[in-house]
Amino acid sequence: MVVQVVFFVAAALAVIFSLIAVAHRNPVINVLSLVLVFFAMATIFAVLGMDFLAAIQIIVYSGAILVLFLFVIMLLNIRKVERIGGGRPLQALLGAATAIGIGAALVLGASKLAPAGGAVLTGAERGTVVPIGRALLGSHLFAFEFISLLLVAAIIGAVYLARRESR
Amino acid sequence: MSPEVAIPISYTWVLMLSAVLFAIGMIGVLLRRNGIAIFLSLEIMLNSANLAFVAFAMRFAADAETAAAALAGQLFVFFVIGVAAAEAAVGLALFIALHRLKESIDVDRVNILRW
Amino acid sequence: MWDEVLVISIKLAVVLGVLLTTVPIMVWVERRGSALIQDRLGPNRVGPFGLLQPVVDAVKLITKENLIPSGVNTLLYVLAPAIALVVALSTFIAVPFAADSGLSLFGHKISGFIVAPDLNIGILYIFAIASLAVYSIVLAGWSSNNKYSLYGGIRASAQSISYELAMTISVVGVLMASSSLMLSDIIEHQTGTVFGLLPAWNVFPQLIGCITFIVAAFAETNRLPFDLPEAEAELVAGYHTEYSSMKFAAFFMSEYVHMTTSSALIVVLFFGGWTLPWVSLPGGWLGAFLSLGIFALKVAFFLWFFVWIRWTLPRFRFDQLMALGWKAMVPLSVLNFLWVGVGMALGWL
Image (cartoon, rainbow over all chains, first blue to last red):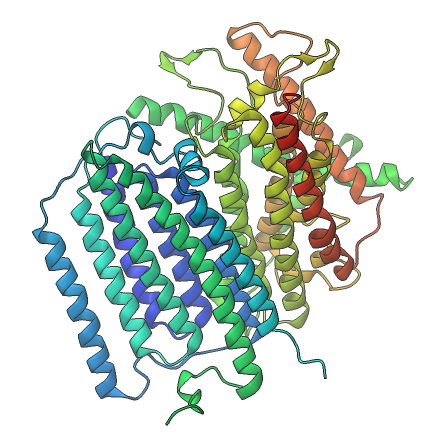
C-alpha cells in the first residue's frame, strides 16, 4: 500500500514538473524542474526494485548531464526564452494536437494490455549490482565496450566543436 | 530495497506514465524554438523510453521463461542513459559553436542550408 | 512495518543531532587550531578557552537581518543554501558508525547502526547525493546577480565535477577488494591483521587510492588547498558573497557537515571504520559504544587533519587545480584500480 502511494506521488510529481520544464520561460527553472523529474523517476525505479538504475539515473542524469546543461545556459547567458508556442498559433496547435494524439493512443494501448502486476524480481534478474555487473561484463560485453567507444567519440567531438578558434 | 514480496504495481501504470511523459516531451520538442529547451524536452522523451523498458522488464520478470529479458531491459536503460549523455555533450557543443557564429540559438535562424 | 519506521526515525534523529552538533565543535576547533598553528591565541573571551564562541556566533548569525538583495532571482537565491544543507545531511544515512550484533531497542530490532541498513547500493547512493551538491553552488553563484559570485560559482562547480571523477575511480579499488558496495561489508573486509602485525585496512595495499581519495575529498568540500571558490582574498567570498545571516549559516553548516561525512567515508573505506585490528570487541551495547568511540576518534583525527592542512598549505591557482584534477588525479586513481585488479588476479589481495 505504501509502495503504491509512493509510486503515485512520484508519478504525479514527474508529470507536473515535466510540464513546468517544458513550458516555463526561465531556462534555469526548466533545468531544475527536470532535475526533480529525474529524481521522481529514480524513485520509481527504486520502488520497482531496480536500485542500481536509480543510482545511475541520479549520478549520470541529474548530477552530470543537467549540470552540463546549466553550464551551457550560463555560458551563453540565456536569460529568458520565448513563450511556448512562440507567436505561431497554427503550428503550435498542430504540434500539440499531434503530441496529445500520440500520447492518448499510447495510453489507450497500454490500458488494453492485461495488467500483470506484482512482478517479483528475484534471482538472477534482480536489479542489484551483482547481477547487472555480471551481465554487463558477461553476456553484454560487446555493447559495454562499444558504449565506452561511443563516449570517447562524444568527448572528442564535443571538445572539437566547442573549441575557441585560435587563428 | 530489493523486494522479496510481490510489487503491487502493475506494469501498465508505468507504461501509461511513460506515454504521458512522452507526449509532454513531444509538445516541448515541437513547440519550442530555443535549442536548449528542445534538448531538455528531448531528454524527457528519452526518459519516457527508459520507463517503458523498465515496465516491460517488470512484466517479463513475472514469467519464468522470459526472466532473462528482465535483466536485458535494465541493461538497455543503462545504455540509453549512456547514449543520452554522449548526445547531450555533442549537442550542447554544437549549440555553443552555433551561438558563437550567430549570436542566437533560435533554431529558426539556422536556415542557411534551406532550399 | 511501523516499528521499523520507529527504529529508523530514532536512528535518523540521533545521526542528525550528532552531525549538527559537530558543526559548533568544528567551529571552535578550527579557530583554536588555526591559532595554535599560527602561534597566536584565538578566541578566549567567551567562556573557558573560548568554548562558548560557537554559541555566540550562532546567536549572531540567527539575529542578523535576513537580507535579500534586489536584482536576485529570489527562488533560486533562497533554494541554494537549502539544497546545500539537505544534500550534506542526506549523505550520512548510508554510513555505518558502530558495531551491531543483533541488538534491540525496547524490543524492536536495530538492524545495524546505520540509518539505511539494507541499501545494497551503499556507496553509489552517497556519490549520487554528493553529486547534487554542485547545484547549490551553481545556483548561488548565478542567482546572486554579482560577478564575483558568478566566478566563484562556476569555478567551484568545475572543480567539483572534476574531482568527483577522481573520487569515484579511486574508490573502485576498494569495491573490487570487498566485492560489495555496502559500507558494512567494506568494514568487515578490513577486520583482522595482515602478517600478524599490520592492520588489514585498505590504506596499506591501496595507498595511492587512499591519497587520491583524500585529495579529492578536500576538493569536493572546497577546503584549502582547493578553496579558490570561496577565497577570501580574491573573490570577496566567492559564491556566498551576497548571503547573510541564516542563509550564510546554512552554507557554513553544510561545509562542515560535508567535511564530517568525507572524514567518515575516509575512515570507513580506507581505515577500517569502527574496528581495531588487535582487539576484539565485546558484544552487546558495550561493544556498540566502544566501536562508536573508536569510529569517533578516527573521524576526529581526520577532521583535525582537514583543519591542519587548511592552515598549513597555500592555495592552488585555478588552472593548477584543474590540471591536478584531470592530469594527475584521474590517471593515478586508474593506476590504483589497475594495481588492485592485477593484485587480485595474482592472489595477493
